[in-house]
Each structure stands twice: as C-alpha cells, then as structure tokens.
Amino acid sequence: MKLQRRDFIKGLVAVPVLGYFAIGAKGNILKQVDKKTIDYYKRLKIDRLEAPLEKLTPPTGTKGKRIRIGLVGCGWRGQALLQKFGYFHTDVIEQHTKNGKPSTWLLNQMAQEDLNVEVTGICDVFDVHTQRGVDISRHNIYPGNKHEPKTAEVFQSYRDMVKSDNIDAIMIATPDHTHAPMAIAAAAAGKHVYLEKPMAQSIEAAIALRDTIKQSNVVFQVGHQNRQQMSYKVGRELFQKGLLGDVTQVETFTNRNTVDGAWIRDDVRDHKLGNESNINWKEFLHDAPWVEFDRKRFFSWQRYSEYGTSVTGNDFAHWFDCVNQVLDLGIPESVMALGGQYYYKTHGDMPDVLNAIFSYPERKLSMTYDATLKNGNFRQSRILGSEATLDLDSAIRMYKDRYSEKFGDVKLTGEEPLYYYDPNTDIDAISTATSRTYFKGGYGPTFIDGKILDVTFLHVKEWIDAIRGEGKPSCDIDKGFEESVTFNLANLAYVHKKPVRWDRVNEKAIIG
Image 1 (cartoon, rainbow, N blue to C red):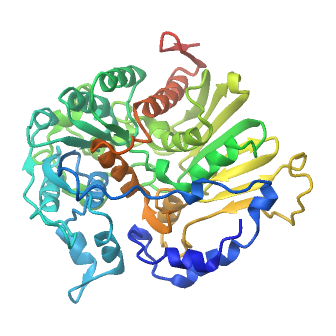
Image 2 (cartoon, rainbow, N blue to C red; image 1 turned 120 degrees about the vertical axis):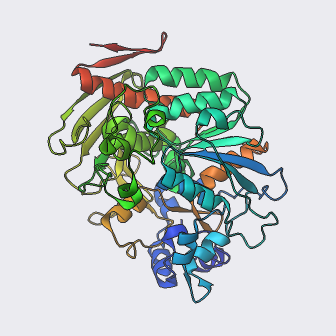
Image 3 (spheres, one colour; image 1 turned 60 degrees about the horizontal axis):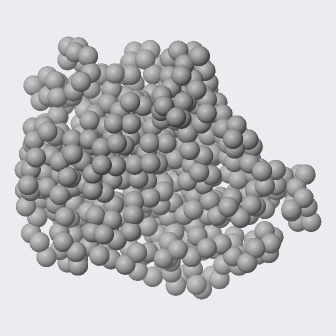
C-alpha cells in the first residue's frame, strides 16, 4: 500500500474537525506520510483494503426535519455530546477566543457539519450542571445556523421529559444504574435514544431494554464511538480476509494510575460546589437502596456497585466492543474472574485489580481482561492468530508469527511490523498522560474520505442520519446487548468467586 504524499495533502484541504486534537503542525502529518512508503498490500498478498477508502455519508442535516433533542445528564460527557451539534458553554467559547478571534480548535468545531438539531430539554439532578446545560442551549457556534437558539426547558425528572411533545429524541449520559430504566421509558414514549455506555447495569435490565427497543420504532444507538474509528474497521477487514490465520487468543487491558483515573472525582472540577441543597438526592438514587446524602457516592458513583458497573463496565466494555466489531465474538459461553479492592478503600467496593477470562469454545479461542488502577503503562488490545498478531488502538500494528506459513517468505528486520496503519497525526502535543492514553485508545479523531474527523461526532451523526431514514446505527441494541451481558457475567464471576456460564437458550447466568 503506497500512500502518495500529494494525495494525502490534498485530503487535508477543508479538514472539518480536528477537535481537541488540533495541533496545527503540518510537519507532524508529513512525518506520518513519510512512514507509509512500504507496499504493505504486496506484503499481505492482497489487491487492497476497502475500509480506508470509506466515504462520508452526504450531509442531510440542513435538508431534513429539524430534530429536537432532550439531554438527561449534563455532566462533562453530556456537555461533550452537545458540542457535536454546535452547542457550547460561554466559558468554553471565551477560553478559545483571543482578541475577538476564535482559536484553531474553535474554528475546527465551527466547521463541522451542522446536523440541524435544536436542544429543547435539559434534565440533571445537580443544579450546577442544569444551569450549564441551559446556557449551552442558548449558544450555537455554527456561522450558517439559520435558527436562533432558544433556551432549553428544564425538566425535574426524565419521566417528565419523555412525555414532552417538544422533544423528538433523548440522549442519556447519567450514572449506569439509570441507563436502562431511562432508555426504556424514552423508547416506550416513542423517543429516539442515544445511550452512553454501558447499556445496562444487569443482565435482567439488558433483556428488558432489548425487548422494549425491539417492540418500538425508535432509532437506538449505544455510545461506543469507537465504532467509527478506522483502525478497527481495517482490523475487521484483515481478519475477514484470513490474514491472521486461526485466532486463538484475545487480550484486553485497563491500566490507570491516578485518583481521577480510578473514578474518585468528588473533589475535582465543579464537583466541589455540590451539596445537599443543589443535588436531588432521591432522583439520583432512583431505584437503588436508600442511604443518606453522601458526596462521595454522588460524584464518585462509578466505584459503588449500587450505581456503577465496576471497572468492567467503565472500561472493559469499551475494549470488548472494539474487538467485538473486529471478530464478531458475541457473548462468551463462560467467564471466570478474580481480583480485589486493595488500594482505594475510601470509595465504594470496586476492585482495583481484576483478571477475567472469557471462554468461546465454539470459536476455539479465549479472551482475557487484565485491569490495574496502580500502573499507567498503556497496552493495546491484542489479537493473536496462527499467521500474525494484531495490536489495536487508534493505529494497527500487525506482526508476523515466527512460524507463519502464509508470510514465511516476507523478510523483516528487528521488530518491524508486517503491516502498519496509523491515519492520525502525531500525539506528541497532547500534554497529559491521561490525554495520550485517551487518544491512543482510539477515542479521538479518525481519518475518513481525506478528512480527520472526531469519532464521537461521526457516531452522533450516524444516529441523527438514521432518525431521518438514512442508514442504520452501527452500535444498535443487539451489539449493546452483547456488551452488557459479557461484562455483567464477569462482574458476577468476581462477586461470587465462581465460574459463571451463559445459558443462551434461557438467557440467564448460571453460577458455579
């Protein structure tokens, strides 16, 4: 695969979205182009790969009906979702404006496709977040926006929002224990649903949500934005062409080594402003057991099994969905898991160290998940085949197996990969270790149709286009169901310290 330098540079003209990846350094991009001079297709003995030739779907936003969005949960993730529609808080706009001129980052946001969406409803149990959502709804940065943004209506509960005739679709970015109940209520009311991962806190909730969605006519998308990352699409094609040989092992990882990375967040950002007077504690608890108000539980809810889904739902769910889209693994036959809470004992009951094994005897393979919250060494997901090993994140590195028959005649030097694919610019300009890990993990931009695009924008656009009758969601209810059952099986195995088997016929977990 010889990438022509001039073709790549031509593709950079009118790059619409660099998001927070906007480095503004063409030299970094050119260095990446210079690396891609090996004829990889000749090495792989194929004519070409179709995935990197993918085209963007034509814009439909300004032509289709204006879609009215209600957001439930206006924390950092909810606010990030609204940005994909061009809605920004004033302090973000001011931060990226100097002497009346927008920064490169803000210009890139202004240049992304207008999906023709209006934010008509905000619902959050924390008043500070509610007010931020209201302010965001008033400020759309698209220069060509023909609609004057209106102030979104505030809903005290999602139960009221789903009844509103002024809302067509609902985005849910709330604690995990409320995901399925809120999505079920929205779908039952005929509202389209964009649900942040993980889809459900339990297998029973996942079944109930799946059945509701199947019986409705709504468009449903789980927020696994890595479905849009080109590296995983390329990995899928490499596997389907048989270039990995017999896949026998899949390895996934979580490595974090900060308090924030361990989801302890009650004293970060605007969370310090939270108190009993501006938080609707009863609404936050939802159907969870009653306890007295506790800031730790509210702002660090991920660490509590009453509200979160452990390290598996927080992080493994991402990596499972990534390898699932490459290999179509589906739900494992059985799972084993061991670990413990050894370090962060002041918040909840989430383990800090966890090892899980997922068995797929019909596929003749197993998948492992290793998690530690006391080491920050980034590790790619890895797929091991009889002919080659595939390391996956925002890039692809494919290494020839020393006993490969298919590639036995390919001469490589040292640790040289058999195939390398990295569509993104250098990430050296990303300052923090957390940010570097985020982008390495594939959450940032991807390269499609000659343009560098934010994957969350593409994922939201796919949902909006599907609502207008164009295409289908790539992370639909079936994919979300596979994700939810798989990580919940691991949680059950960890809690009970016994193997857990999936009864596919009766759709229930068998412990021991």
